[in-house]
Amino acid sequence: MDQTKVYITKERKKELETELDQLVSFERTKVAKELESAKALGDLKENAEYHQAREDQAILEERIRTIQYTLKEGEIIKGGHKTEVTIGAFVTISKKGSSVKNEYQIVGPDETDPAAGKLSFDSPLVSAMLGKKEGEFFSFETPGGHTMQYKVVAIK
Image (cartoon, rainbow, N blue to C red; front, top):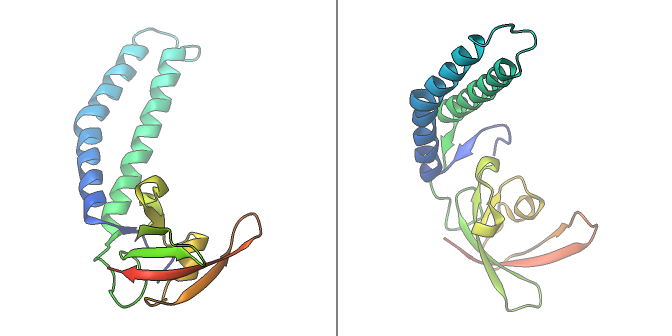
């Protein structure tokens, strides 16, 4: 798996397309009006409103470029394999010696949301489980330096 490639789900692609449309058709116009309004206040050198509007414009344009790049270069996650842990897969794991099971979807870094069960393929936990098959054990080192062992319970 290419770690420099951008991976996104179909849902995330739709979210980004909606956000881009909003930014281009509404926010750009809004920021342009704020900039014009601030220019009308006079001396641009010491005009805080003008400087804030320029900063807002730069942030907006950077976000637009980032979304456009992601949509252009992003590879849609197709759901993963059911035989081994890959990006896009839904994986159920349990800590060795525990009956508690956790399910995660393996996604790209842009979509990471541990509370929603979405883990990035480049996280330490997922990096350790990539390529594993159902029933296999794997271990990884936590940021605190502890080695943890888990079992891949199910892949879908």
